[in-house]
Amino acid sequence: MTSARETWVALSALQHLLFCERQAALIHVEQLWREDVRTATGRLLHERVDLPGHDARPGRRVERAVRLGCERLRLVGRADLVEYHPEASSPTGWRPYPVEVKRAKRKSHEADCVQLCAQALCLEEMHGVPVPEGALFHGAQHRRQVIVLDARLRARTEEAVARMHELLARGSVPVVARAPKCESCSLEPLCLPHVTAGQRRASEHLRRMVDLEEVS
Image 1 (cartoon, rainbow, N blue to C red):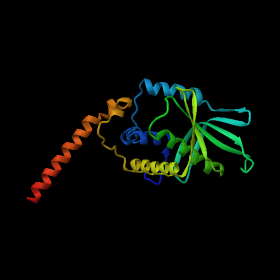
Image 2: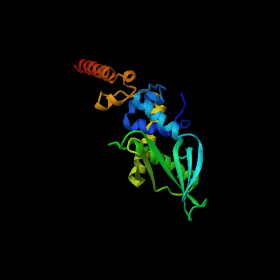
Image 3: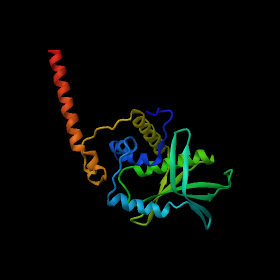
Image 4: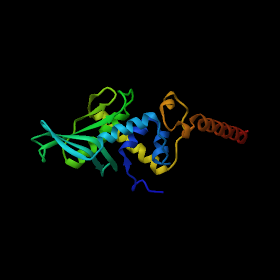
């Protein structure tokens, strides 16, 4: 098994982790994947955006499919879009502004924001300049959502990175109880949360029975 010191966390893993730790482990530890209509639609949207290249727009430069990395957190991946805005105080004359493309509308949880923040942490290390905000582009609404990358979100992001490193180091898949969000997960037929959670409850019951017999 690869040691924790050698592992690098994929930026995409953070979005999976914040949605469900079991999903994250199935994908990034067990290397399982299953596509459904939702994931296929998202993949096609990203394929249109993720063609490497660049273009110039008024007041900014835009790079697509930008490779990212952060030595400090051992993060690796790529950003859908990075806009470079003129910045006189920057050594390069530009300040990066990450834009993450999402198929669906805004989510109630922070998974997308954490993924965007992780991209910003990579860009800060790569360019040596602060990245105070970025944006989520929701394809369903064709609208941007500006995200302020404040101290609370940065701490949440680093916690998620640390937890993902822990899962990779353990090399095991957590057991979770079935929840309403399982209905929207493409891995549900492979995950079988109702079966695995039931097995855990049964094993815990047997262990408690054994402990009681030993005490008596």
